[in-house]
Every structure is written in C-alpha cells, then in structure tokens.
Image (cartoon, rainbow, N blue to C red; front, top):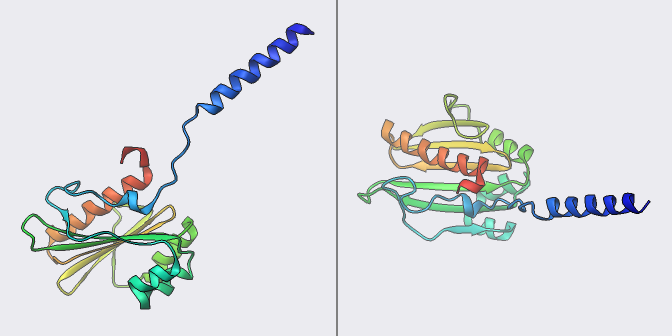
Length: 180
C-alpha cells in the first residue's frame, strides 16, 4: 500500500511539473501583427498607429464604416500607414480582430464587391482578393479571427507585389505568433 501511495505521489508530482512548465499561449493582439519599420524592406511607418479597443473608438476612427465591423463581432483594430523609401507611395494597413473566424469571414464576405480578383496562388490567410481602384490597389484577406485590409497608392504590378508582401507578413504573424 505504501509503495502504491508513493508511486501515486510521484506520478502526480511529475504531471504537475509537466503541466506547470508548459509555456502559456500568448493571446494574439492586432498591435503585434503590425510590421515594424523596414520589416518590409524600404517601408517605414509614416504616422502613429491608431487603435480602437471598443465601439466608441472605432466609430471615431471610421464612423460610417464602423457598423460593418461592430455587427460582426468587433473586438479591436489597429491602423498603420507606411511610406516607401522615397516618401512617395503610401500604404495603409488595417487589421481587425473580429473575435472568431466566423465573424472574420463574415466581414470579408460582406465587403466583397464582386469586382475583385481572388488571390489563390501562395495567398495570405484563408481567402484573399485584390482589386485596382483608380490609382491604387486594395488587398483583403481573412485568417483565423482577423480581417485585414491593405491599400497602396500605386496601381502598378510593383504596388500590388508590395501589398502582397505586407499581406504575407501579417498572415505569417497570425499563423506563427512566436516568430514575430
């Protein structure tokens, strides 16, 4: 009986050590997904990051558009603008935490205009698309609980390629947060 009790205590102790030393999973925050200066070579932040952590803050950032996110589970968002090395081309990045993948996909589907081109080869996220709008490209994707919007004021193939680099960077940060 004494051996069984000692064995049970030893097993309990080992189990506690294994579970207690397991690294806690970090909750992914939209702010952590924003690329740093020159993380995408030649691109630096051109303004302070804008963050909304509640509906009131979101409405003050994007008043008329806020309902699109609020009605689909909005949790938090971060907006960041970048300029290229010459200071001529601006890229705007918006990342929305919609709480879960159903809500993120719902925003993605709701924002569809029908005129975008699906990005299916080595794309970012679960689904992605892009379209040319005047003198810019817009690229959108969703991954897990995040909806991501990118706009670059460059309607050339190079502009689209840069938008895709930003998208892949954010998508990778969502998939592998420990690598960021």
